[in-house]
Image (cartoon, rainbow, N blue to C red; front, side, top):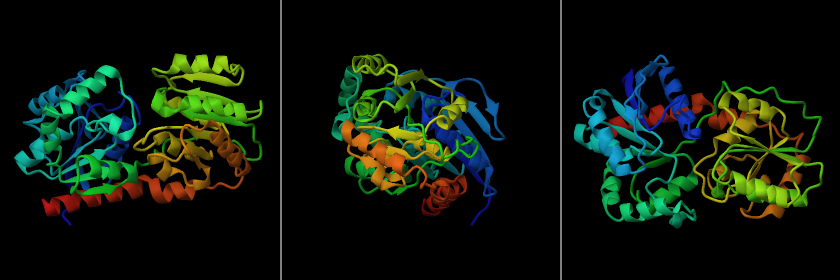
Length: 376
């Protein structure tokens, strides 16, 4: 096995520019690749400004792309990356946007390529039960029937794909990547995300949700679950988004203002305090979410996880009896009560170490790099 791989990672954004869990996961990947003796060099290319920085490895920011049009974004990235990308042993495209241009370069320069499938950017949302903004849905419908076909053709030039969950793999195999090599490798935990877990002998019925406030996250069903729980239960909703005002109105209409706190957006380095003050983490999503980083964070805080049995969370939750159907507040409440009964029985640290520790995930990714180079 040849030592010292030179890896190039291509991503739309990179910390400290964070839109969601994807940026955090990209940084964890870069950090742990750089720390591995089998990797000689890591270079991250992102499109979120022009500040070049260094975390031991190079972070090259190639301007700021604000367009939602994938055709324009990939054309812009082509000119920015064309003279840079062919120096690497392997290219890893992360966070979806630039999969087409990476596929193009992989074919043009015969560079081994990997792409992580962590969203549904090139799949029409309506086919997976997800509603998008009206104008965005119109663009996507037109694009996928015209120029989008060219982008998807370029994506198929990528040698190997990483799906974050079994459902993501299934959806992409059925929709646009039939016959492609797709391997399921989940995201890794952040070992620097530390919490000081409160003693499990004191249960205070504190529920927490952390995530974007949009329809597909199903937070209104979590609010509705309080109708089936005693007044001793309280809920903290951490996050912001387009549905925040609507959710606040739902809480007021149900006379739940004294039981629900809308904490708003909380910076990543301050989230641990919210996990520490909670007893049960609830993920009420109603769509096939590709993964769910907040579930890993909650488990690191020793919280039992209640989630709906759809998408990536279905793979992540270790206690399958705490999964429930989506869009069902009453069943969500039953699972929450069951989690209370199991509060002193859960030990997830070994589960996290075996399945999501950086050493485990990094090994799988690097093995895929070598396999891809061998078969190129």
